[in-house]
Image (cartoon, rainbow, N blue to C red; front, side, top):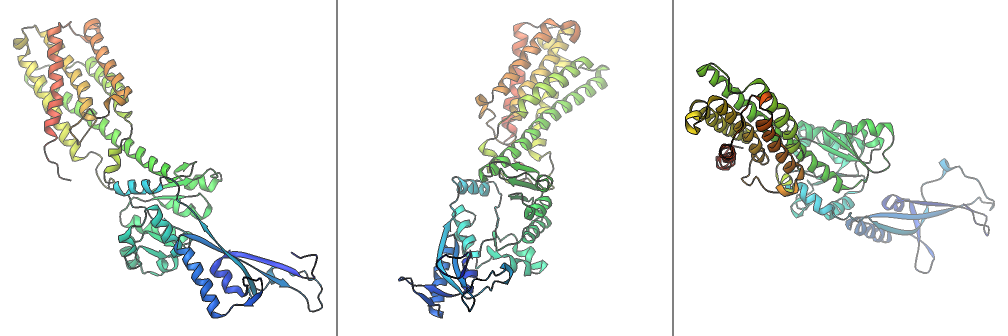
Length: 461
C-alpha cells in the first residue's frame, strides 16, 4: 500500500515470529526511531519469542518495508519480486489458545480407560509441549524423558523403521508435523497391534490418516466436502474433545450390551438343548414343546430380553476398564463361567422336575409339564438380572434408572401369567395355584444366588 504524504509503497509482513525476525534488519526503539538490529538485539527478540512459545503462545511478528525508486517515483512491484529481507520490525504478539473447559478431565478419563492421547500439530516444539501439558497429555514424567515424549516431524521422519517402532509408544506429541507424519504415526501404531482412532478437522490434509485409522473422527460444523465424508467413520458437529470421549463411552456400552445379550441367549439355548436331549434319551419324549420353545425364543429372548439388555445406559464403570485387544474373543471367560453355571443350574432343576416333580408336588403329568415350562421361562426372566453384570456381584446397581429394563421384566411376567392361565389350549398348559406359582418364582429367583456365588470363582485374565 502507499501513503498520500510520501512517494513510496509500503509492504507489510506478518507470520511466524522466527521467520519474520530472520528477514528483519531494523527495528523501532521506544522513541520510534528506526535502528539496525545487532546480534545482541536479535538475541533479545529471540528470547522474547522463546518465552512466549514456552508458555504455549503462538508468536506472530509484524514488519514492513518501504519500496521506492531512486527518482522518488512510485513503482508497482509485482508480489513475486518482493525481496524477503531488509524488513523493519514493528512488533511481536503472543496469542494464547486456552484449553476448552473439561478437556483435562476428559484426557484423564481416557488415561484411566487405558486410552493414550497423542497430539500431532503444526506448532513448534515449545508451544506444543506447553499446550499438551495444559491439556494433561503430558505429565511430569513425560517431560523428563529427555525429549522422547515430544519430537518434531522432521526428527520423526528421520528415524529408521526399527527406531520409529521402538519410540512410537513413548512419543506423545509431534510438533511441526506434516500430514505424512500423522499417517506414519497411525501406520506404526497399527503395526504394533494398537487400535487407532484419529481425530481431525476433516480437511484434505487429514484425509489419509483418517482413512488409514481404525476409526476416523471428523470434528467441527464445517465438515461438508466429499473427501471428509469418505474418509471419516464418525462426524462430530460440535468439535469438542468431550464429545470424542462420549463416543468412546457409548461404543463401549454397545459392545458390553451385546455381550450381555449374547450370554443371556446362549444360556437359554444351552439349557434347552441339554434338557430336551437328556429327557428324550431317558424318557423317550421332549420336555418343552415346539410352541413353548418358540414362545421363549421370540417373546422372552429376542424381543423383551433384547430390549431389556440392549437399552442399558453407559456408566462410569465402562471407562475404568482396559480396552479390548484387537484379537480378543468376543465371548470372554467371564461369560463362559456365568452361562455354564446358570445353564447347569437350570438343567439340574428342570430334570429334577421332569423325573421327580409329580411326587414332589403331588400333581399329574400335565400340571408337572406346566411347572417345567413355567419355571424355565421364569429362569430366563430372572437371569436377565444376572446378565446385567458379567464380572461384579451387584447386579442391581443403577436398576431403578433403567425404566425400559423394569418395564420389560414386568411385561414378561404378565405375558407368562396370561399364557399359563388363559391360553392353555395353545401352550398345552394347565392352570397353577398360588403355591405352585410361588415355588416356580422361588426356584427361579435362586439363580441370583447362584450368579452371586459363581462370580467369586477367579477367572484368568
